[in-house]
Length: 276
Image 1 (tube, rainbow, N blue to C red):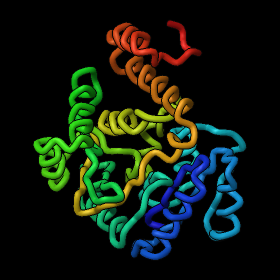
Image 2: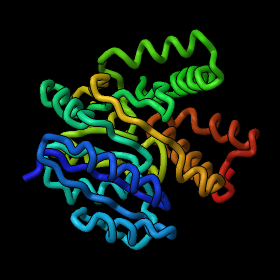
Image 3: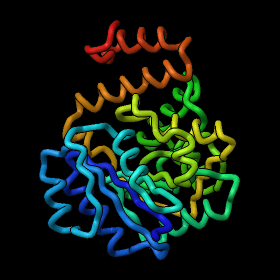
Image 4: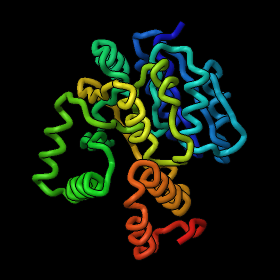
């Protein structure tokens, strides 16, 4: 019986998921584990490549693009592990990372989910956790990230400092999120109205509503190459992000929805299939 089930949702990320799976094969977790890949109807040969190169991995093919939340839910429902690790296909997992994350969460029975320190290909840390999304917290988070990407010294030092300390944020990134399977099921899994983006923040909110805490565990570190789906389908990805953003505000901050719609309309970013 695996202790950890690793769930990877893919959509047209053949090269990236191959690299991710190879990193897990080269540095396998010491904890008993299995891997489930949910392929959301990729058209780049992802499923065929996994069947050919990784015959022991369980491949689930729903036959259409369910989105990130629904794809992960398929994996969680099929998981047998005490813990489920939701892992982006565009990540590289170094030696010991999964075990450090599992060990951190297992040692804290008051916590129901945990996320690692996430760095990019150059080793720069990602601000992969934060306070509950709202108009002001979201603006603050985005401002810090933009300044960091532009090389602004104070922002670089701030992100480096906070990502080296363990803590209990409101959410951790779904790029690599470890959760106790029973708690994930009890919380109702990920809200499938979020096709892409914001589902991790909402999921952590559901876990916290049940009394669990969220753990940021910097002793575990993974590499996030970021944005494979965005590179292949940038317009569709941007629209999916905005739909999820609006759905999140409709669920958690309904009074701000008219302001958000007006802002998106003014910037020309309101998805055309949504009423203005």
